[in-house]
Image (cartoon, rainbow, N blue to C red; front, top):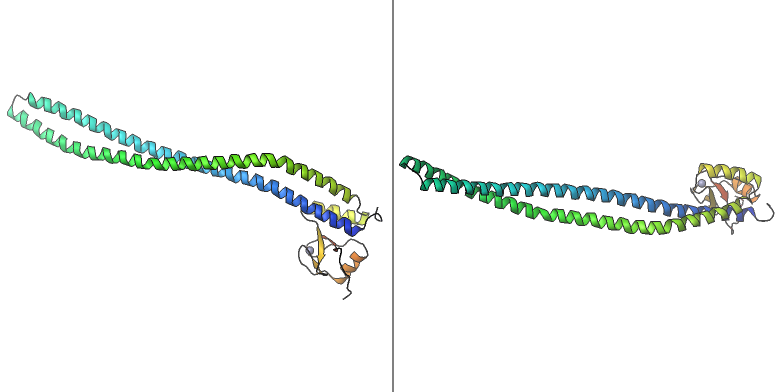
Length: 245
Ligand SMILES: [Zn+2]
């Protein structure tokens, strides 16, 4: 099989397919990561919405309580005015009058407090509304992403399977001495690039390490050699010109 196709072409093709797999797997991973981060955003916004709702409910309950106090005070005032009309003695009359003026002062204070509390609750409600909008926005974004990911995922997985099939077809073309190293590197780089092209006549295309002339000579003899720095299996580009020294 070694003779049927040049080892250089096979390695280049394998490298191309590896890059395609990395790109496809990257798309799957990015999609999943995006969904995770958008789920986290929903949780955060939901917590903020709950907190705003709780705060509003507290402010609203306080305002309602103040309103009740106003009503209660009004009832007391009415009762004392009734008692005033029925007062038997001067002393009783004066005592009631004092009570009434104290209640009236209290009423005016309570009134202000109740109004202020209602206003505060009403103003705060816009926080609830904007928190709800943020939550809704993040939920919509998540649904949109999820829809797209659900559509894209099977297509990407199909492409990955197709590329893996093509890869297998190339891998069987590798001579034994290459295959041994290639299999080991494939495990070590687990799904990453395990090959590197020689660039600018002298440099590893992956880590830019300068490749010794001896190593280049080995490549020219169609024997396997790895980069001494990044350990990737090296191959030369089509237009490579071997220059000694
Ligand atoms: Zn390297």
